[in-house]
Length: 174
Image (cartoon, rainbow, N blue to C red; front, side, top):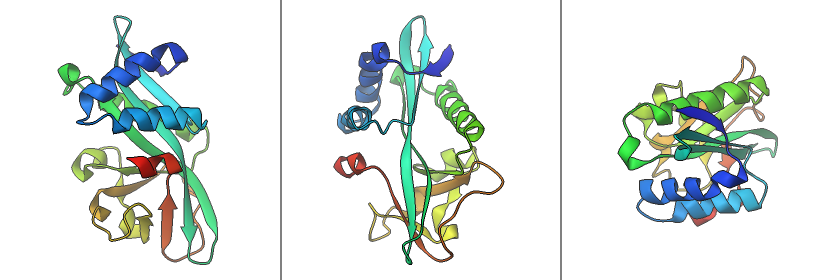
């Protein structure tokens, strides 16, 4: 298995993995929309025998404090592995490779909306501990799943106080 950057020749394989790993095609459409908007900061694929078997995408996010100050980071998702290959560490390898690469670029922090027990293995903690919330969850229904990870020693942060995190508008369709 090889983890590498996605190229246009991989798009059909990524689409197939996303559509097989999720119950609806919404994530596949999200990825296509992020690509079209040039908001696919980092897209990785796991490949085996010239076949895409997994994918992970990272896109820009903005944290905005009540006073209007902003900080910029990255959002992880979607992540998908071909159902026949799940449980083999492919998703973990994709996420670790992406986070390691983003650290080399100096990206200060990453957020994810996902299973807390799974993402804790990478060091993610509840964003609510920072008084951060996701704008797509105004009632806090998914607050436990919204998580944050510092990618370097001095992550940028908007002014002190609660902050709302905005993903790219493409996420509003999922």
